[in-house]
Length: 423
Ligand code: ADP
Image 1 (cartoon, rainbow, N blue to C red):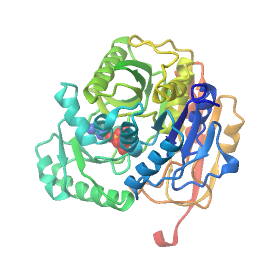
Image 2 (image 1 turned 90 degrees about the vertical axis):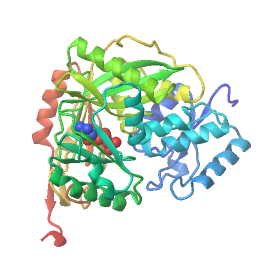
Image 3 (image 1 turned 180 degrees about the vertical axis):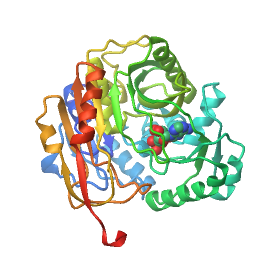
């Protein structure tokens, strides 16, 4: 098969149990070379859809070696692009694409989307809504954040999944919060590049899925993420489309489109999280240059719009035009979709998880993605163990999704046994 018939992309660090990106590649006729996650065993005899080859690389331990291996693979048989849904790999992917002359957003934009210090500085320089913030390159500099308005949020510059994000209510809590976040990130991530301390934005949270192509942006969906208040910010729900007045939706779209320009993200998918400060004004929390939630964002946006978001994202990564792309204006909605993240609801050794099996047979539920199982140990927050499960469902309206989530709050429950060390 020639490459003009079937483009090939390298897909970096995608968990093979999260199916959406693989299925979209298959529908789009795109072949994938999968760089498996180091913590996951994928074998040649059980490849996900569209995967034609495995290419194990260790980005963290040997970045230069990984780049060299990609180059060798490219020279032996050229592929058309490289892509990831894993936030920490975004700069590597941009750099690899740049060095091989493949489509991509470039290293500068990738760093702006991945490093919260740089992101805040670029958004502020473009005149967008940004809370008061300071960057801390070492924890001893904590007093630089004294002048901010409290409460504040302390978070790692390179964090993801809310790991190490902590609210500090008073100036007297600041030093301890900075030290705790630093230590936690050091133990979980192995190294800390720096922290951001920023003023707490009081208001409901939203997630926005968008696609950029040649500098134009289309906002596909805006979804409700609840109103997490801390002190730690576990993810909980995602329901789209968000029920907001049209003028607020318009302001969100305008802010998100402007953020693409400020961060120079001209091509590919983005996942934005923002808060409506004072219930009205959109302030970005972050914009990732990737499909969010390891593909959950594709599930939500595709169910709301009827469009194959991930397929178009992959086409752009291969240098092909997206099939359904009209910048500006709202996108038609054909239904509602939701993700319920089962809360840990405690800690210890998981004895049983109740309610998930029944959901697999529920017609509203399309996927139950289980990450934690009986026998696994959940540490108390802020030591992030992972999320027990995602329940992805589709509905006629967002109100029905809300009602379904109220049902899940009581029907899904985890029993724990205490660990000896906690007794
Ligand atoms: P991560 O990349 O780890 O998800 P975020 O910056 O998105 O980090 O922060 C995680 C969560 O913490 C957000 O979804 C939000 O609920 C909360 N959060 C972060 N910064 C702020 C802020 N300035 N004001 C209010 N909440 C915040």
